[in-house]
Image (cartoon, rainbow, N blue to C red):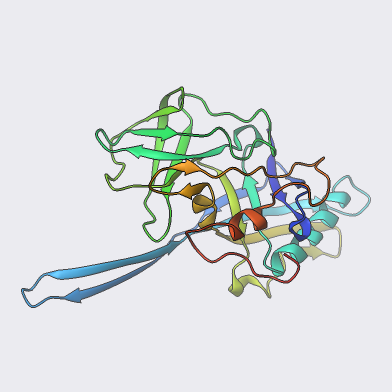
Length: 269
């Protein structure tokens, strides 16, 4: 188990991972939602729902120490990651590397408590043995702008059929991703965080990590060729031993997305 970051420098298909200190914290921040309401002539209200934007914050206060310690390599990696993020690159994060699991499927409308998962772990090249089990908490999310999101505990997972606690999955939910609650496959640095360093230091004796990232919702749509037929796209993300440019990266996968939010157009990707 490790708190781990995953990214592809320059989007070249070779994975780089960074393990964060155990004392690092994950905070899920309040979502920003778009909604326009108009009063009708009959006194009712028409509501137009837009995209929702969610953020997470990773914090490790005095979690790193001077360059003579074993943290020196991690500090250098985080500095490189900062450069990657400021140029529009994406990064994944899991609070538990053993649970770095996300897959795509469709909701079962009759009972609202099942999801048909039509593929295995889409991020198995990141963590080959990652798996979910009964009792694990998952998040079920649909593509934008529909943007449904609900959290459940797994009751059972058999032959691609995931049974979830509760029966709150909307009936018109299509093109869904099921992921471990604290696994975020694709995150980006928001524009309002560009001028904020992710690392601060106290005379180079200790360092604090403070990284606020926005969820990249297009990773959900990237898993489908056709949302209505629910046929998962066929792509293979690169691993840590993949030759440069031989595998897919988060950047290339989301750029191929046919539906969803805007993909990264930063120079170098």
